[in-house]
Amino acid sequence: MKQLTLGYSPCPNDTFIFCALAEKRIEFPFALEVLIADVEMLNRLAARGALDISKISVNAVLSILDNYCLLRSGGAMGRGCGPLVVTRRPTGFEELRNAAIATPGSLTTANLLLRLEGTHRGRRVPMQFDLIMPAVAAGEVDAGVIIHEGRWTYQAYGLHMALDLGRWWEQQTGLPLPLGAIAIRRDLGSEVAGVVEEKIRESILYAMKRPGTPWAYIKRHAQEMAPEVMRLHIDAFVNEFSLDAGLEGERALRTLLESACALENRPFPQQTLFWG
Image (cartoon, rainbow, N blue to C red; front, side, top):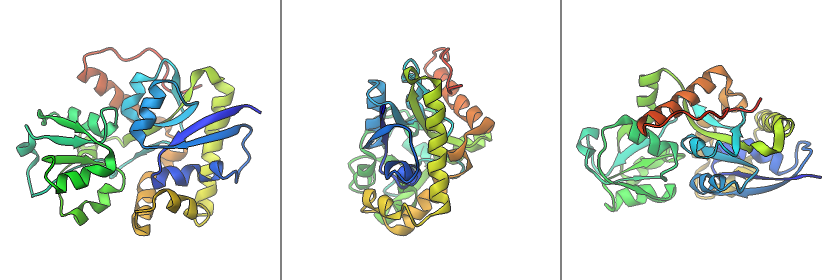
């Protein structure tokens, strides 16, 4: 039996999506080795071609297209779920033009959105995402771009929102915000890609129909997160775009990548984005 490596993050949306696959609750025609890691680590592993299938930040897509294409299921995309810029004291975002702002990694979509918005000209400080809010609260940086559950927990650190980058994107484009995608190695071939895409969709539907089933798996990988925050996280990031990006989702992803290329004054890659 062919073995595939699969990487995804410990965030509740990912563990909800992949639980049925990881725990062999649905049939899967390949042996599966799972790696659970921070998304910036997954971005860097994919850049080296180290995983067969991986969750990645959309901002990392441009750097891996020689070896990977994208699946239409399993990604993170939606409305009202984007990164936030937070500060210790109430501050207008214009005041942060020259500030030191922590980001969850140079390859993350959050970092790309901060660059695309265009106001900030100061230092960006890459930092593991769960260390950003404590660093802002301690005054180690002037502000931070927070992702994942930070959207619902930043006030517990006494922090204030200076800008909702997801709302900014939606106002600029009218499109949902593509944050993460599932990439698969091109050399596995279209037949394997089609099976994996369908099985991820089946894993999501399994969890949606039996919402209590993946809960232990979700909690095991999000040990410091309150149950109500886990639920908010899943509700925000697991939606119709998780099952199938569809034409609107594909347009949103391409628009974001075209914006990234324009920002860096480079041509859009010739490789296909999605398999098939």
